[in-house]
Image (cartoon, rainbow, N blue to C red; front, side, top):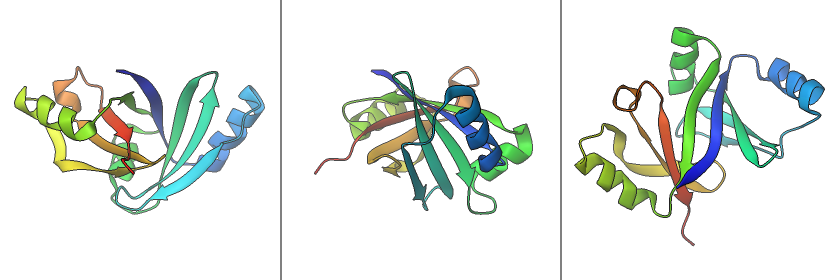
Length: 133
């Protein structure tokens, strides 16, 4: 298991994109919508670590609620696993509160699920694996 990316919730994606270009000289290498999560994602390569800007595109999406409650900022840490379905079941059996009934399709051609931050020292954790062909 390794850190796959860091998710950052943003209310004003254009301002943040301009800041990233000014500070890092970087533009997103990939932008896509994940309608099931109500977000548009913008991925950056930050020297081997991916940063994911999360822009809410639906009112009352999880990211929209997060920003309203906490403001912009660190949203989650994502970890790469070999099989999200297997880890979903494993973490659920350990008594952790996994969010959702099963892993779902996420950005960047991944299968994803989250573990509630109340069970992970206040950090929302995402676990993701590549989609199987």
